[in-house]
Every structure is written in C-alpha cells, then in structure tokens.
Image (tube, rainbow, N blue to C red; front, top):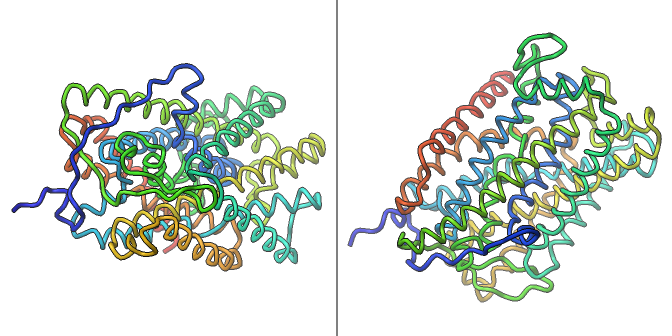
Length: 488
C-alpha cells in the first residue's frame, strides 16, 4: 500500500475528521479569542525592540527603521502561514517539518539544535539584572560588579521557572501576562514619547521607515561602517525572531485554534489536569461547510497577527527608538553590562529621577517577561519534538506530557545558570539573534513546501504569499551573508 505523502518520513498519516467551528467574537470578546500573537509580541518587545533596536538606532540613526518595517511585514506573513498549518492539521509547524525528507529524526535534531543555538542563552534575565541593579543602586553596573549582576540574573531566571509551574493551561498564563505587558509597555512608551520627543525626531522616524536620512538629506538605507553582527541581530529581532516565530504554532495549537482543539494542550504542573496530547495531526474534507468554518478561523488569524502582532511590533520598535535617540547622544555604543539601564540612566540625569525609575521598572518587566516567554517556548517546542518523534517518550511515566515538559525545563534551568556566566548578556542576545536570521533563511522555504505539499488544495497559500516567503528567505540571507563575511 502506498503511504500518503505526509507519512513517508516515518510519522503517522493525518487522521481525517471535521474542522471545528470557530468562535464568532464581537467587541471586547476579541480579547479572549486572539492570544498567540500577543505572546509572540511580548517576546519581541523585550529583545529587538528594547535592546538591539535601540543599540542600532543610537549608534547609526533612525534611518534603519525601514528594516523594521520590512521585517515586521515579512514576519507577519510567516506567522499567518505558520497558523495556516496548525489550523489545518492541529500540529506545531516543526512536526510538519518532520514530515519531510530525509526523515523525521533528522529534522527533529536539526530544529532542536537551532532552538538551542538561538534561545538557549538566558540573555534576557541577564539584561534584566542590569536594570534591577540600577533600580537598587541608582548607578550603572560596571567592572567589578559582574558577580552581583550574575546573582540577580540567576534569581530572575529562577523566578521565570517558578511561574511556569502554576496555572491550568500554560499558554493561557502567558497570554494573560502578555496582555498586561503589552498594554503597560506600549502605553507607557507612548506617554513618554508624547512628552519628550520633538517633532524633528518624529519626522526623522517617519522618514526612516522608507530609508530616508533627514540629517543627510538623501536615501541611505545602510550607513557606512556598520557593525554587521549588530545589524544582522537587529534585523532578525525586528519583530519576534527565528524560532520564537515558529513557536507561535505551538501556542496556537494549545489555544485550540482550528484542529488544535482536537490535538490537546500542555497543562501546568500545579493546577493543571492531565490531558491527552495527540502526537500527530488531522486533515479534513474541504466541503462548503468546512470552508465556511475555515474562513472564520482565518478571520481570527488576521486579527491576531495583523491587528495585534504587526501593529504592536511597529509601535514597540518606533516608540523606544525615538526615546533613546532623544536622550542618548548619537554614535554612542550602549552595549555593555548595563544596556537595559542605558535609557533609564540618561532620563534620570536629564528629565529627573522619577522618569529614570519608571524606565528602569519597565525594562525589568519587559526583559523578565521576555525571558519567561523564551524559556517556555523553547521547553514547549523541544517537548513537542520529543513527544512526536519518540514512542518511548510518549509511554514514559504513563504517557503524561507534563513529565516530559518539566524534565526538559529542569535541564534548561541548570544550563541557564551556567550560561549566564559565559558572556555579557548583550553578546548572548546578539549571538542568538543572528542565529534567528539563519532560521529565517531556512524556515520560510520549509514552511512553503509543507503548506503547498501536504495541505488540501483549497486551503493552500495564494501566490503572493508564496512569493513573500521566498523574499523573506532572500532578505535574511543577505544579512546572514554580511555578518558572516564581516567575521572572516
């Protein structure tokens, strides 16, 4: 018997069933329906938008904002295509990748390595430690203070681990925390920008979205003499970045989007009940009734990604950018042990201690919450890879996915404590961000393949989306080539 195309790599074929009916949100009920987008947005604000973006803008100017616009657009297209796969099959996208040649085990190891290389470094907790140090001591951490910053970082990281033990459904816990994060941070930055940013700076930001340098009076897409390791990192983390985007499909599954409702979810250790988590996914007949339900789900995807993620990613990058260039002299390299407190320190000296304190508290909250999202997303993705790829893992400890999840989390927790000692947080973040660029070269093409090969023809992506995925691979391929070339 000939195996279906999706089963030729060693995974089980899709089980045919009906596509669940979508909710029909109106008004404020939309807040309870969208969710995966706000989790990814929360993670993005704490890396590119709050650290790497400002480092690039302060050093090279707001003319680089065009990179953010292009990156946010391409990443939003990628995100919607990730959700296309999950709604249609109930699988995380890496499970879809494992359905391709040369085989499921190869891709399981390949993407697990990419996850580790990108987000296996707890740089966000380390960066948050610099802001916490500033809050308590009212000065930037410097040479000789590495140990206390390290210990603060370990404590921050441990608190992230502790939060993941509680709640009924981990995805819902993250969703609620990120609604608070996004509202508080974007709202806070908007108020501060309205108070302190000049019309001239707002004009420079608007011009930068199309690559126009108001100071030079000409288009200047990339300034001369840039540090490509920083620019490549900034481009990849303009938005979420690499495997953080891929984890969106895991969160969409656990939210119950489309066939994810039939697949199950990962419950928490304390307060969560044991659930069945399907290792592989589903398919459906594209009847008129099914396609009507599909359009309902796609309406939710558009709201979650274009209405929440894209708009939030743009605001989350532009607002901190204009504040940083207002208070910190152009050409300054702010990367260092206290990168997260650079704006707080500048505002404290120029606008008053109260504003510096507010920014420092925002930095702590943003970076802590981002570290929480990152460690959870990595744990979730590796758990799903193990759960899908190994029957022995699924049988271990009676088939309780929580045991697998928290075993992976424990291993990552031990590694995180070690990794915080290896290098300064900003270097760890740049390293991970540049690996995200590598992920963006590979994953759009891989996603294009599975969405056009394994999904029913009626729900495959239209041509403009296929072109956008190829363009994304080329766009990030250029940045990867440039930063690799600069290091040779």
